[in-house]
Length: 102
Image (tube, rainbow, N blue to C red; front, side, top):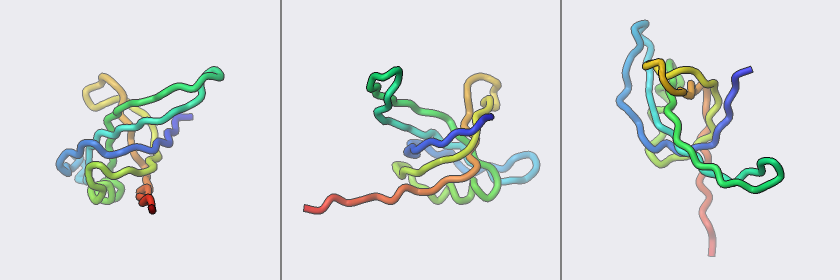
C-alpha cells in the first residue's frame, strides 16, 4: 500500500501549469517538523518534499498561501525527472490557525 498523510507547510509554490491532457497541475514544496518516538526514543524530524497536485486539487491548492499549513493526503512516486521522490497530493485540509490568548 502506498499512502501518505503529512501535516506540512507550503514553503514554495510554482506557477499553475497544464498537463499534456490539459489538466491543471501545481507543484509545491512542503516542509514538516515534529517530534516522534522511534525505537522507544524521542526524535526530532524535519524534512522538505516536492509535491504535485493535478485537476481540481491543483486549483484548490493554488488557494493556499506560502506559509500556510495543511494536512495533505496522497501517495509517493518518482519525480518527473525520474530521480528522487514526489508526493502526489490527492486531497488536503487547511489547518486552522489558533491564536494564543493572554
